[in-house]
Every structure is written in C-alpha cells, then in structure tokens.
Image 1 (tube, rainbow, N blue to C red):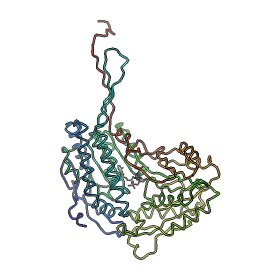
Image 2 (cartoon, helix red, strand yellow):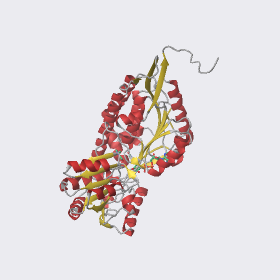
Image 3 (cartoon, rainbow, N blue to C red):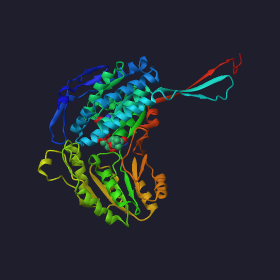
Image 4 (cartoon, rainbow, N blue to C red):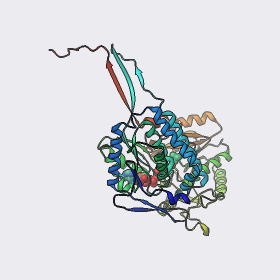
Length: 496
Ligand SMILES: NC(=O)c1ccc[n+]([C@@H]2O[C@H](COP(=O)([O-])OP(=O)(O)OC[C@H]3O[C@@H](n4cnc5c(N)ncnc54)[C@H](O)[C@@H]3O)[C@@H](O)[C@H]2O)c1
Ligand SMILES: C[N+](C)(C)CC=O
C-alpha cells in the first residue's frame, strides 16, 4: 500500500513529529497474515510528560481555547472534510490494521465523518445561560468553559472511530489533548494527526503519543496537569485509571466493556431476530463492546431459534477483509485468540454445549491469520462464566425464559450495563421491557445502531459518562457561575 511508505512512524508532540525519547519502535502486525505492516515509535513516559506539558502550555495560553465557538467549529469541520477526502485510504488502513472487512471500515469512516460534522455544528451553539437571580441588583450567568488538558486512551477494535468520539468534542470545546491509541492498531490515528496538522492548530493543542498503556499509560491518569482522562477499553484498565485519577480528583470518563443481552420473545419475527442475532454476535468477529453475545430466548421458540441460528452461522464466510466476499475477519492477535479459545473449555466445564464452532478453522488459506470459527453455545444459565464474562470474540450463548419478568431478571443479571436488544411484535411490551433494562442503550427490533446525535455509554460497570450527543460535548466542558453586583454597597455583616 503506497500510503504505508509515506505514513509517519513517529509521535506528534508540541507541533512536531518526533521519535520516542529512547528511539524504541514496535512492529504493527496484520492479523490476517501476521505480516509486519510497518514499525512505529514506542513512546516513553518522558514523551508523555512532554506532551502533557505542551498541552498545558497551549491551553493556558488561551490561543485556541479562547477562540470563538464558530472558529473552533470551522476547524473541526475542516477535519471532517479531510476524513471525507481520504475516506478510501483511511478505510484500507483500518482493514489492514484490524482485519475487519473493508465494508465495515468504510462504514466506520462515514460514522467518523458524521461525528466531526456533528461536533463542528455544536461548537457555537451553547452560549451559556442567564439566571433569574433571587438577589436584587445582581446579574447571574452560567458559562461553559473547556475542561482543560485531556488525556485520551483508545482500544484496538474501533481504532479511529473511538478516537473521533474523543477528539471531535474536545476540539469543539476548546481543550488541548494528548491521544494514545492502542499500541496494536495506531495507524489510522497517526494518519488523522497528519490530516489535523494540515488543518492547522496552535502548537500543543493536539498531541499524539504511541506505546503500550502498561508502560506509558499510568502518567496519563496520575499527572497533576491533566484535567480529564477519557478512556475506552477494558474494565480492569478502567478501574485502574479511576483509582489513579482519584489522587488528584481528576475527572474521568470511562467507556468499558459489556455482556449485552439480546432478548427474543416468542411473538418476534423469527427471521428478523435470527438475522439480527448474527449481526449482534458476529459483526467484527464479535469484537464489539456492545456485541449481542448473550441471547435470551423464549422457551416456546428456543429450539426453532437455535436451529435457524446455527443454519445461518454455518454460512458465515471467513477470510481476508479486503476480499469482497468475506463476512468475518480474524481476531486481533494470537494472545486474544488464545483468550477466546480458553473460554470454550470453561464453558464445557460449566456444563454448556458448544453447538457449532468453538475452534480454529481448518481451511488452509486461513492458517496464517488469527481466525476463530463463529460459535453458538447452548444449554447455558446465568451462573456460568461464559454467560457473565466478556469474551470479545465470535461467540454467543443461548439461555431460555418463560415470562417477561424472568427475561428482565436474566437480562439485568450482569455487572455490565452497556447495551441490549429486544425482539417482539408487541411494541407495548417491548417498551415496557426497555424501560426496565439497566443499560445505556436499548434497541427494539434492531441491533447495533449508534450515531453522533445519540449519547453512548454504560450503566453499572460498563462505564461513567457519555460520548456523542450533547452529553458527549458536556464531558469536555466545565460549568461556571458568574455573579455580578450591579449596585454594590457594604453589607456591614461585621462591626466596623
Ligand atoms: N464502551 C465502549 O464504547 C467501548 C468501545 C470499544 C471497546 N470497548 C472495550 O474495550 C475492550 C477492548 O479493548 P482493549 O483490549 O484495547 O482494552 P485495554 O483496556 O487492554 O486497552 C485499552 C487502551 O488502554 C491502554 N492501557 C492499558 N493499560 C493502561 C494503563 N495502565 N493506563 C492507561 N492506559 C492503559 C491500552 O494501551 C489501550 O490503548 C473491551 O472490553 C471492549 O468492550 C468499550
Ligand atoms: C462503540 N462501538 C459500538 C462503536 C464500538 C464498541 O466496541
């Protein structure tokens, strides 16, 4: 790929592309064939320190933070235009780096464009608010200000999409940012920093550091000059970040994992429910925070549903994400495939049945990639680890229920609360159930849609805060009350 030859291998700190302080590099691997795509800088704690200091200086100078909302909106809009212009190369880069199908990568790029457009539009919309002050001769107003220096940490499954959910609102608000993409999939984020450099921001407003969170991540949540840590990733990393940020009472926004129920009633359109169960379970090989990995189906139709699901699963085409006929790519790494595979033994030990899949494919042309067969696990109940823990692979479990109350209890029986689906032709019932699900997103007769206009985030241990929508901008704003006495006189509270 021609772009790879030109793409920066370095970090972007204080307005310059720089190698890591100790010149270390990391190989970026194509999960389809294990070939090295390129080597990129592996940053150090000193690099992150420099990036945070640069962000602090730029924020405190006010050069970008104090620009009118309209001007910030134009910059964010210019990034959206660049994404659109470079849509094809960005999509190809994402498929190379993650193994997802090119069709999925194109859909991601369209979402990302919409996210920048949306926050560009919001940048000049909230001018604050006048308060009806109860104190005579005072003027009272609420103003919104950028929160300050933000560190942003993203996972490998939706590299640029998750980065865009953080970069766009931060820049619309007027923050200075330090972004660290996953060390496994940094390529599209590097490319977007090149594009943002072309758009032009004052030095220090946008900073990119590269490397493993286990090596350079801690300083991003412990540094005193950081005002907000925005993290998307696994629950254990999220907990660590939250604990560390507590020392300086630094704000945290956490988008964590999920074990998302897909509740199918016996009055559902069966063909639709099966089709969406596939969409929920196997899209991007199930490496989706909101994957519908926990199917909860009415016992009246359970047998028929399982048979129809397995028939469709047999037809899922595995392969190279660049091949138009491919429906499911590989998992991201050998380590991750081992983890997914390990869950098969756990499920069997707990008494579940691997109805289909549960192993690596035998096809000759898939042997170099980290492939795992789409899997359906039956005879499950909520006590099982396979039903409770996030597998993050192409694996769905199936449980049965008899009553609406039981379906709700089962669906809510999780430490997570990210998303869930309900399939029923009875809209009254579906709405009733939706109200009782403790999740940030509930889909009725659908699975997976998300877009810039609607907030995204989790209940319970799926996270804190929201991305996207008005709430997504609010994460990057502080609220200040300013009161002015228009006729000041001594109060003489204390004697003269
Ligand atoms: N809720 C959401 O919207 C959402 C979206 C995408 C992914 N996810 C979740 O992400 C997880 C998969 O991603 P992952 O395996 O990359 O997660 P991860 O937690 O291993 O890594 C995420 C990021 O955190 C960094 N990191 C690791 N240790 C760190 C530390 N001590 N301090 C700071 N950063 C550190 C990593 O380098 C990476 O950039 C899944 O659990 C998935 O559900 C959630
Ligand atoms: C938030 N989402 C659905 C785009 C990706 C989750 O992994």
